Length: 427
Image 1: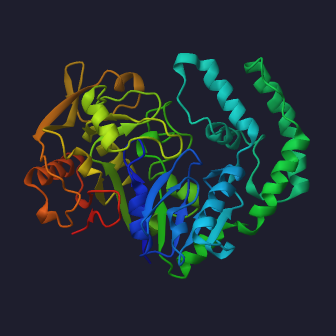
Image 2 (image 1 turned 90 degrees about the vertical axis):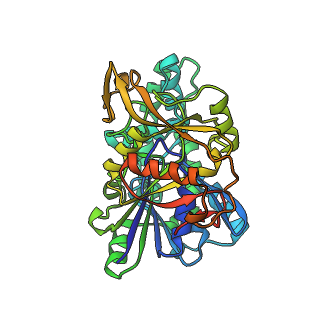
């Protein structure tokens, strides 16, 4: 059996969707196992651009079963809107091609209101969330008493009981944070979500049992990561992280499948570094070069449209992400974005109060004190978007890729030189 995982090793947005799309043809099942509609992939398929948020990239392939597993939190309205867009462009998606875990947790309107209230209360210390209720839904999941799962959603009597308990408590909690808050109505939420449930019911099932059967039947599984290792709730730059395990550590808990079945872990990195929201960023370029990378790389959020913070490649942070997820190899994406630069810098270590280190710190207060130690490399000043073989890359471009491999500590097996699936060097 072949099982592959695609994991982002930085702060997300590493162009994982392109690699998932490329690998999907070799697999039978594609699994999204964490996050919600705060993450997204941009995929170019059959010459068309698709912006996916909750749906796995496998949804574009008719032979593949796409699974939204237990670790995902689902906004039903966002999901149905996204699915309708796929149906309009590519035809119907029958339940045998798309499965949603009955254990996945549901995002309600009070989650987004609660999140907005928390962020507003923090003022200048706001985390910088996408305001989609992801974190507050995960908070309820961990707290249990306010949690509502897909299995509850598809049973009206059960849903009604849960809402009658949860909504009044949510109203009181949010009102204590926001004087202008308008309380939610149990009846209105119930009617709205029953409508969603009628459309979702054919897709909701025990995906863990399905994945276990798939393994026993020898099906090839592809696990599609969302966001990146440095946003992992336990191992990332806390508290400026997401609310789930976005490193390879989250595969088992998010899908119900043992990591033992995975025989290939591919780490995805950008040829530079970006992040969205707050938190320290040692190699950030708040200057003309950073803006150049942002514009050439179109570094604006797939889901939110927010401009991403841009900086040089950070081998300390990326190497930590690679070790954390236990990758076998690396795919370096968006190398072509650097085509026009005279010089390129790579952070090979940090200076922490005069001491050189390659350890990634566990606290953001320490990360904020880290000064990058750079290795300067010459640019290649050549358009590489038409190159399809590693041997044809300019010498300086290959030197740059080899430097990333050396500093991160894993071989580079895939090089991306453009957004189209054909613009990928695999040899």
